[in-house]
Image (spheres, rainbow, N blue to C red):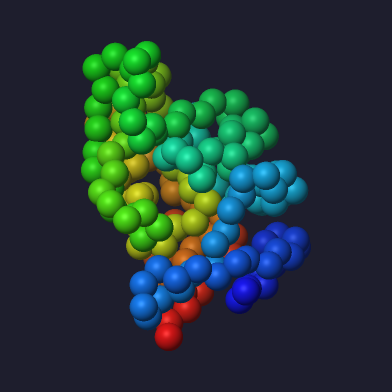
Length: 178
């Protein structure tokens, strides 16, 4: 099994490598179950992120970070869902294609979340920003609510995302080409 060693805010992890296609592999960063990384990443990101009223992420891998940043900071968070739930009235939606997901997906906010976000300063967060497709979809969805985007942040910036000047991140994560 191939791995990639990374240091995030002073904590080392070994990430397992997975092929995306015949010429590209990624080192998979999974926050689920890693309380130590989640807590320290949230703490360090909050030090460098702009003021905000609410933290937003897409279901599912960004949820631990989103929750922990809200817990340590503004105390509010909203999750863009990947499917409409029975309790979501009048949902708004956006389509997204992600490097780690084979097919097009949709993200949704229900009416209550959209109303809550209206007029608020939103910090969009994710575990990893790579192509930026998920981030762009979240931006579009948040703007549909009438909220203001205060900033965009991730634990890791993968590949060329490290060169972006519109995101905040803690560490670079390379892509691995064959």
